[in-house]
Amino acid sequence: MSPTVFQQADALHPALSDPKNVQYTYTDPLSEVPALSGVDASFDGSTPIIDMEGLLGPRRSEFIKQIGHACEKNGFFAVRNHGIPEMKISNMLDTARDFFHLPEEERLKFRSSDPDSIIRLVTGFQDKTRNIFVSRQSLKFHCHPVEDFKSHWPSTPPSFREKVGEYCASVRKVEVAILEAISESLGLERDYIDRLLKGHYVSINYYPACQESELDVTHGVRTHTDPTIITILMQDDVPGLQVINDDKWIDVNPIPDAVVVHVGDMLQALSNCRYKSLLHQAIVNCERERVSIASYCYPSDDAAIGPAKKLIDDDHPAIYKDFTYKEFHESMWRVKCSTAKRLDLFMAESD
Ligand code: OGA
Ligand code: NI
Image (cartoon, rainbow, N blue to C red; front, side, top):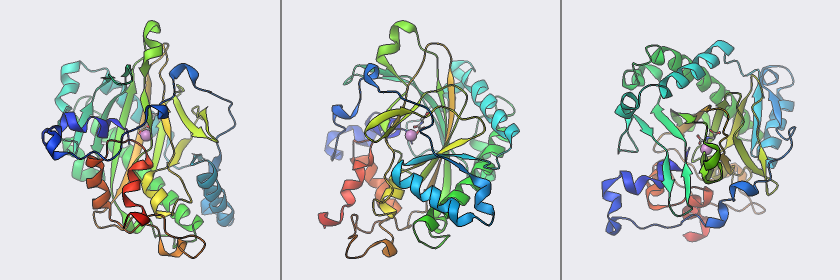
């Protein structure tokens, strides 16, 4: 999920803008934000690619090992043969573009000051501390089950509800299958993580092409981790996503017909830090606009997010204490931080 949700919280939540009501725990050190011109954008071939069809066949255990290895070593991987029909993907991307090409007043109808609202539009903004413009615009909304939320979504463009609904239902299936594989890769029951699941939230991200003269001071999305179990990111064909691997920034360029899956904060906690939440960001370019669709699954309020008992022993003491999703979600308003450091509030030794 994007840091905007949290970093703009004080501006959006009237109660939070009163300093008496807020006790910020952490802030992101500026050193975490790399200078845009200094990014060591790298080589291709660095993205592990998993063929999801393999999970359905007789070599399932081999594919589960590959997924476990990618989560542990890289924190992300691309998935091919995920089963989302090509047509649903192109319809989703076209609908996303159509929405962001609507006149501003049409889009701004979805602007909301409530970060927990069913749907809301987030616009670009100036980050004065870092002297950069964060250009991403996004439409964020709940979508599982689709029928419960559809009536809140835009009715312009007219195909929005149908096309977005189809994509959301398909990506949810991928999410469940990947979470089953991730549970197994940790030696947990296949449905360990699925049992915690409740909703699903999508962010349609739109990055306008940037003026050449502004490129140095424009960022797509600043460095962050997602407060999810996993995130499934579908990108159009314009590069922009970068992740930290082996202490270096690398480009995760779009791979045709593949989606990117990455580890989020809650999986870091559940796995007792075996899988680390991925630090990532998005950059912009001057030639083409870019669209990406991020799908975030979230657990039910009472879901236990602390390390799975099976992963704790004398050699692997619990790094986090037991906590619920509700506690994690509520604490995010006290943490002015957009990385997995927000989990530090739940460290075992802080008891
Ligand atoms: C996000 C995000 C990156 C991208 O939506 O949380 O990190 O490439 N998006 O759009
Ligand atoms: Ni993200």
